[in-house]
Length: 333
Image: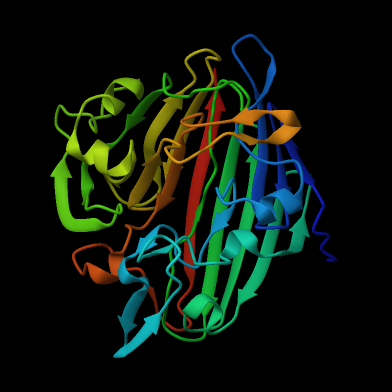
């Protein structure tokens, strides 16, 4: 199919409507009804593809070839060192200077309830080895669920860690702070952060502290807890080690004013909780003003910098080995 950079692809099912863009295979909007029956767009974003191209917050973008950070912007694979862009201090972040969120994807399949985007990340793109063929499929269903599926295969051993970088505000994308949202996560541990939000390799138990979301609670109190890990990230910017394996329910987020509930299912081992700590005042969709902590990111993933930590689940994709992952965001009131 012909791909138009400025095309908006709308998907609909009972109780949910989304828009996706070929540029960045971007999730531009997710509209569901709040507890009062009012349609509410719950993800931050921009109006045009050009704004996504120029922006630096990854709003709703598909992140790859490697989501999150790689320490020192380099890694060794099969005895060879690969050097990557240093776009986060001395480290590599979210695929580099022009990651997957800055690429125009092709539309290869489209129905009323689903769209599939595809591209080839060529050998050497942003420093990564192998020609990687990758697809992203968005679909909605009548249970008010958004499914995001990633599939990929490479003609050489490479690294892979794919996610979507949606910024959620369940009170509405234009409603201000999201820090009174309530969060529950099925995670007993986090990966400890060093300065720069790189993992040290240690696992920290969440017991009783600001990272203990095993019972639902508001985000705001933990942000003012004085915990040293909160200080390192200027808020929550941490990988949670999700309990269980395979496709399972891993948590939920509740809009404190809208009553909208978002349940999360995934087959991934980790989730990055990020509370918009580096957002600055900018213009978003429909003239909305976004600012510091106006959103919550819940990015399902493999662990940051996993190539340098053999104790973490592997992020090496072997030649001709298929990669698949799925995350579901299910909405209710």
